[in-house]
Image (tube, rainbow, N blue to C red):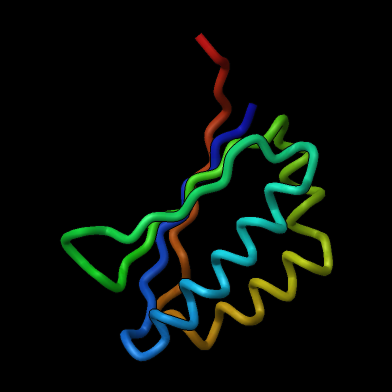
Length: 96
């Protein structure tokens, strides 16, 4: 299993549009068989910072998804909404 954690800082004037886009993107991504979990959260201390949490069956499945047209469209739409590049981390994990 692969866990992906992404932190995104959103422009204040784009927060509402970002949340709407993320709700749609999360639903689309959860329809992918290899995606087990995908959630996003607004941080309490910084209202324009969001964290994305994903669990994928494998690194190969996640890598394949990041090459899809849907992911590319999301990444391109995200660009004008954020203040800096997202901070991404990927971890290999095994259920206990």
